[in-house]
Amino acid sequence: MSFFCFFLCTQARWHHHHTKHKHHVHHHKTSDISAPPSPAPEPSDSLAPEPSTPPEPDDGNASNSTGVFDVRKFGAVGDGVTDDTEAFKMAWDSACQVNSSVLYAPYGFSFMIRSTIFTGPCQGQLVFQIDGTLMPPDGPDMWPKNNSKRQWLVFYRIDGMSLEGGGLINGRGQKWWDLPCKPHKGINRTTLPGPCDSPIAIRFFMSSNLKVKGLKVKDSPQFHFRFDGCKNVHVESLHITAPALSPNTDGVHIENTNGVEIYNSVISNGDDCISIGSGCYDVDIRNLTCGPGHGISIGSLGNHNSRACVSNITVRDSVIKVSDNGVRIKTWQGGSGAVSGITFSNIHMESVRNPIIIDQFYCLTKDCTNQTSAVYVSDILYESIKGTYDIRSPPMHFACSDSVPCTNITLSDIELLPAQGDIVLDPFCWNAYGDLETLTIPPVSCLLGGIPRSILVNKDAAYC
Image (cartoon, rainbow, N blue to C red; front, top):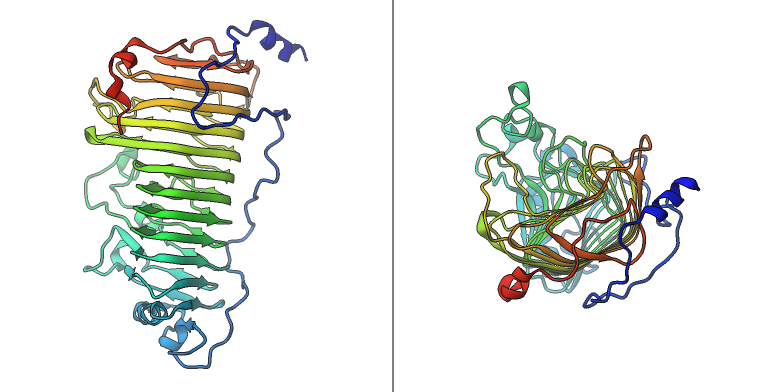
């Protein structure tokens, strides 16, 4: 009690935030610092495929009137060794021509498929039901020379598709992660030159009205899921896992995609659980269990002096644990555009390094040069973020551009304590403007008030 009182008594700044967010309704709630959002999805003990309700049986013919297309009827063997690619492509082509169809990969079989593009548009709604196991060739040496090494299964120009089931998608990523070009795989943990392309496991490109539900996905060579140029995406009850040191194995990455819902899922991997790239807006992430990994990230944005625009993103009612970052916004120097209208709400941290971080000096090498332009970060709300942080980094880190400061950062109901020991680190701020709506633990006294003159003068800074 005395520890808590100490912070209340030493709080440096506390006043109401008069410039409200443009589109958020604030809901203040009381919750114990050690209590995560409830119910939080829990990791499953097993990634083995589980039988789900199979589609209605067909009449035994490859082309049938029931709308169910079992890949075995098209010649798939499912022994994990035989190349079943052509059987899946024929089943897809047949299912795609039916008004309402199910492409079925049954439980108890392991299907090896080469890099493939499943192309639409299809006649109507299509369900790709995976109850067995799908896997690619085992590593770069087994990958066909004429196949792209940047992607494995691609769904292109699809409108109205559900990828679901109780099965497993096994990316067999270990041999890709062991390439000498990967981080820390060279002599003395260095990165060596050489071919480094690695496939994304599942990619949706220029598609809409998509649902991904119930699947287990593990060990992708690179990103597990990537949505590019998509609209209206619903992701539900996914379980994604990869080792903590597997490079670039983001769970779900979205780019130029809007109308996204990611709910009730568990992700642990070697990179961001969810990463949000340029061109994304109207994204709602809820009831996610994230970690170990690199947390939930907006960015990186503005690389190679590019323009990046991200808006109306909400992350709520989630748990992040044993991760390098919690909720992060990362941008490169030299970029332009804007990140705005972001809400991080009711998030429980468990031994997280950098639980709250804005990094506008993001750089993967030591020789990034200082540049004057930057992506403008504004209207960021952090509310009801509680738990413990790894003491190697401060609990809050706001490193904003020298020339384009962050503005309208709002903190409400923040309680972050060290995971070990009793030394509380001070938050870090650089050129960050905002306000506190409530007392915070630890106290935040480094945010600047008002709107900086550089933003008032340069009204085009937030142009998107």
